[in-house]
Image: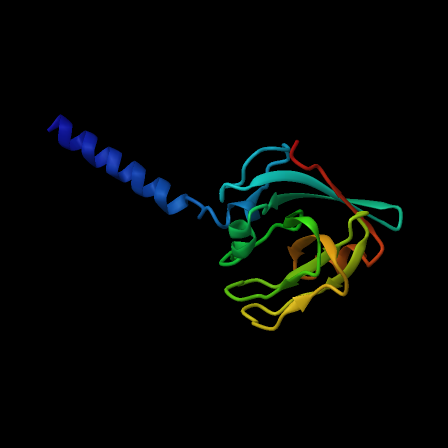
Length: 168
């Protein structure tokens, strides 16, 4: 009888935890960690990132997609992204960048960043699931993805400066 009660209690507890758990791919939408070097629920490094725009500072915590596999996955299948979260795609050398929204559920602002940190261009509110390429106008050092409409909301524009802590 005691074993049966323990089993039922354990099962009920596990069921409750499972019902309240956040899917790993959405956890960054809830509350990103601020510690540089911490890992997101998706297993990507988290890094602080700042955009300087017209004398204002906008702080974010972004997931860093370094490998080609991480970059191919990007923010696909995510159902939410917190206003102060995002993902950065650093490149080992300058290159023309082209992204699409295949399997991307939410609209994103795709921000193309030059080597000096200045914003080259912004593709605002990209269309979820679109196969149309979204490309930079010149070779860039990184691409930053934020929640769709966030750049306009904060007044972020080409020429503003992006800085982020890169892993040592």
